[in-house]
Amino acid sequence: MDGQVAPFEKIRGRAKALKRIRELVEEFKAKFPDKKIRAALSHAENPGEAAQMAEALSLILPLDGDVLLGEIGSTIGVHTGPGVVALFLYAV
Image 1: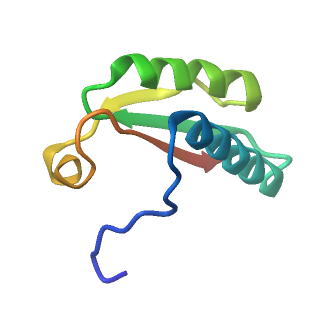
Image 2 (image 1 turned 180 degrees about the vertical axis):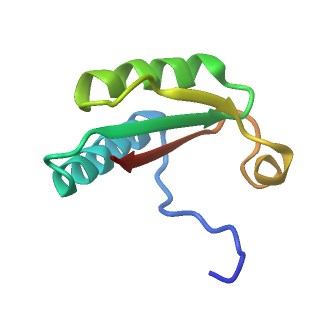
């Protein structure tokens, strides 16, 4: 969108958000049934939630390697605020 940061979806509540993330992961996995999936998580001052999500991902995806963990930088963090966890998936 011409360099604009925009939300993919707005979902209220942690439980609903985690449920929707799982649905999106399953949809992604279905698009690439014969491929391994690599995943990365970034967080803004929320390493515990990122670690929990990494563990959950390893149970539902045929991951090719470990889930990479990192911190969200200030450029994105100014839009998200503290506590956010971002998920990145790609097929190999």
